[in-house]
Image (cartoon, rainbow, N blue to C red; front, side, top):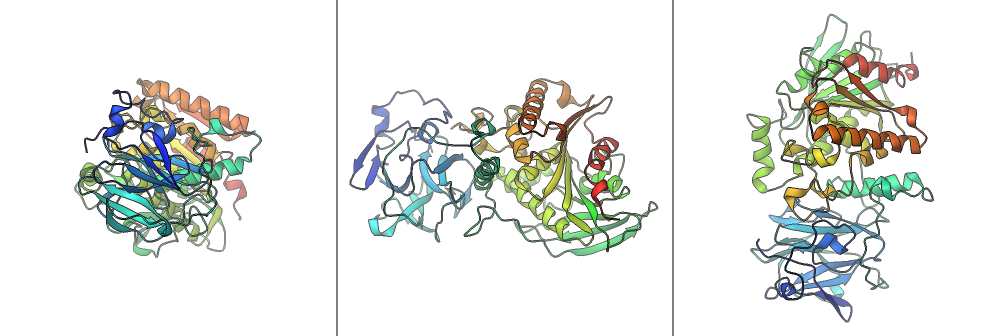
Length: 513
């Protein structure tokens, strides 16, 4: 690290473009760092290839970057990557190619084909900076290790008539502010979900930009029938990322009949050492055993351990797990990716349970669990409705690792080149995630004694996020399907009765009896 990169100049050489060397560029550009995260500048202010081009090589002496056109300049979407690691080097997420690099803070500009939602690449291999780039090879750079002067290269399909015209602006539809009524709202959702799928490294296929994980094989560890008649089973199933396994409680309502269809309820917990026990056993916890409460009232409920908590951890505490698996590699943002992937798997599991109405899967969470519920519902069209409790804040607050736990940070939401300022220059915010949920029902729940409700700057972030989300639902003709409820006297905790009242409007009237 340590090489300061400023915005470079371009000159064309045949069908290749060379970006001025990262050291030499300093002599021609202002000595000041470019404005961090101006998303309307090419590559967010860092030196990079022109729009539509990918890096195909780096000169080991001058650090000049060789570029090649790979797509139309106005048909790619891009983002800044801070955290992805493959083969021991910083790499763009799968399905994206490298267009820019900023060694001073070790960030990359990664791009992909907007029409597909990903770029079709082949098997990667490691090469030196001075690896010869032949036009016939159609190679692009997908990763870089500056100290070792190593590149990660991958073959790419390049159309022979790709335009070479360079544009200085990024043509993007990321964020609801860029949604135009002349475009299909479903198309806007698809573009934004594809963008999130790439920054969050979600799985994709050769034809689909995002695929849901298959339902896992479930092992039942124990089963008990409670006084209320609820059947509660402790289960184990594999995690997408390997060990440790996932553990959860699966709860069936009293007098469960597998021939009927029931609504389903997924309860995601927050920073609580009681983990799934707080969601499904102990009503005195801040999570109020919400999964049990809903099962007693007709839902099939799932209460998993959040990754890094309870039995879904190989460490002594959540912080130990975080530092062991994420911070030690400098991978800011990688924990949020892990949450989302596993939560998609939880929905797949619920969808496969006998008796579950797959069209009525509802997701709720408190605090970190609410953060997970928001992201999951934005990305998973199988979710019928969402409850976010005690955490519905704008990303100016939530994406700040100094004021909220780093496990909730998604740095690629920001166009900032500085990893300490990823809550600035945001490309996507909380209300944009709400737009991806709309018009499905969304309840925003707050306790009147919750510190996040009352204390600044969370208070202003809360008001802004709620107002903009309500405005978006109204603009989409769904103003009655979003509600914000304040429960007087409630601390940072989940309110079961309020949540059930909300869900009953949409769920129980549709269940088969």
